[in-house]
Amino acid sequence: AHKIEARFNTGVDFIKKEGDLFEVVTERGYVYRSKNVIIAIGVMGKPNKPSYPIPKSIEKNVNYNVNECKNGERIMVVGGGDSAVEYACALSSSNEVTLSYRQNEFKRVNDINASNLNGLVARSKLSLKLGVDIDFIEDREGKIGVRFFNGDDMTVDRMVLAIGGASPVDFLRKCDIEVDDEGKPICDEYLESSIKGLFIAGDIIAKSGGSIAMGLNHAFKIINRIKQKEERV
Image (cartoon, rainbow, N blue to C red; front, side, top):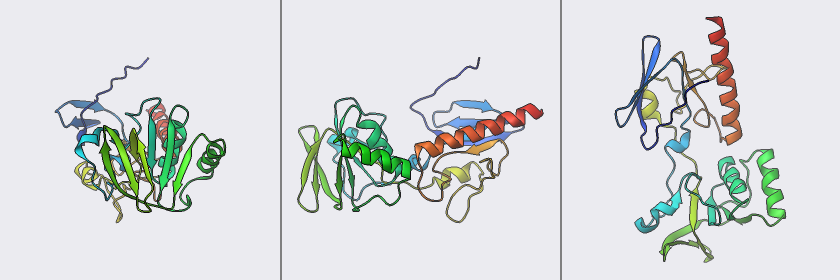
């Protein structure tokens, strides 16, 4: 049995290697030591912000992941990549969901996600709003009013913005991790970074797009690699 401890409401400030162990130092000063570390913050650790302002009164209902979503809400997911599609499909089982994308079709979505999405749309479990961008959002008595550039209008309880993000280059460099010209961490075939024992998983290393499935596959590969290394000791 292994002890698992979760530390919420504090981000990681930096990671450094001291001898054979890593020190993971949080923004609140907690220090954790480990032989191996996996960075899996993804590009959503530094998400892209929309061009339109978000009124402060409804900020809590405009999210960049699904952690705050509750069953029975009317939710708009905004984005055209695998994360947006996966969010919309997962939320549709217990919510009224609209997936909004400014393009007319999803060109960056893998085949499995596209099939799941098409199936839910065909069964009227999920609605699409394609080919038009959002002009602005406003507070409508605690709900989110969404106005599109073509004049269409919707009111929802919550918005999930999955419009991509940027690789957190400053954080990676602070941890002394080598990055390429695009700001992506340099890893070997086992997803181990330039610092031995420090692995990178998820869309933070993807050259184009990313998905939950990809992140799970990365985790499987990394854990197997760590297990192999331990067995040699």
